[in-house]
Length: 372
Image (tube, rainbow, N blue to C red; front, side, top):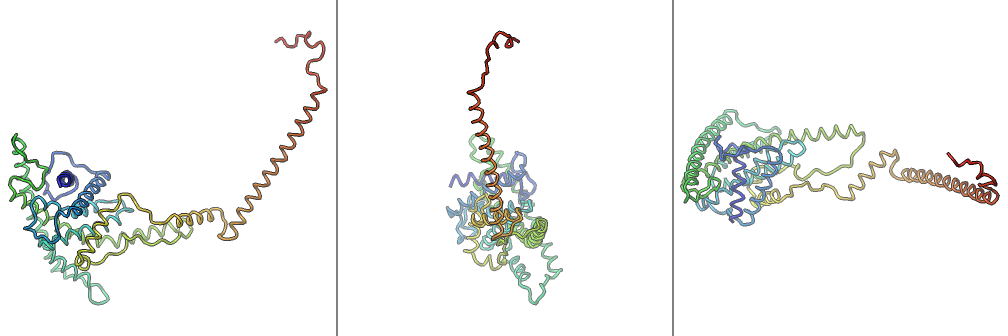
């Protein structure tokens, strides 16, 4: 448990410093913010480790109420949101589709937990999202502009309220941490989440972070559901252009599981076991890319490419091509054997002539021809 807490404290502090705006603009640590793909991948790996450890230890049970969860354990409820937020930071177009699908799983897991705890007004948002996903008639029903505008204004006001409260609590937390660090008998560290001297303010800060994260997760889910169709269409068009440039028909492949459409919000969040299984699969997935085809399929594709480059047709023509190449090769071997035979005859003739040849005739040594 101590290892889990230490790993979370270090990773969460770096996350707030580098990528998150949940601190309300207050720097959590004096270290400069870190950015870049390597830092992002490192944070994702560390939070996946925290999520796997928390799931294995069952730190926070799904049946617990908010008042039953200790202040030190509230921080682990943030892990799915942090993983979702980090997944949305992936900008490379080839990796973004899988990252957004993973982010949906993380956000759904987080919002389902907040819904069961009664935090963040998820029920009202889920009901409005459900009405938008189930239109009546052939054309999708658009939400009432006035109602949608009122809802957005109310959400914005709540977020501003939460940001102000979080900023105040962060400042108070840092001031308390500095005072305790200056005290030689102090046991408080500003990176140690959930064990503040003032537990009431610490709990209020964590609950406020959960509420602010729920609002951010709801906005991110809406944005992702608008972006996914456009991204899938862009990738499909680019794939068609690449195939047209190659002037050949690639073997058909099945779409990866991550790019297939997922269930709606209401149906997915209404099935906790299925959602938890998807969450575990996303957390425990290896960091490297897994193969999408078997070795036999790869061999067939390489054979098709070789056939195309050699200009032969599949079937009997390729046999003729290789037969012709073999015949040409055997002809070259025959010519080489003929040259070797001629060389052997010339060598035998030279050896026979050695018996009648005198390289040192009589008197040649007195002519001083060997003096330079």
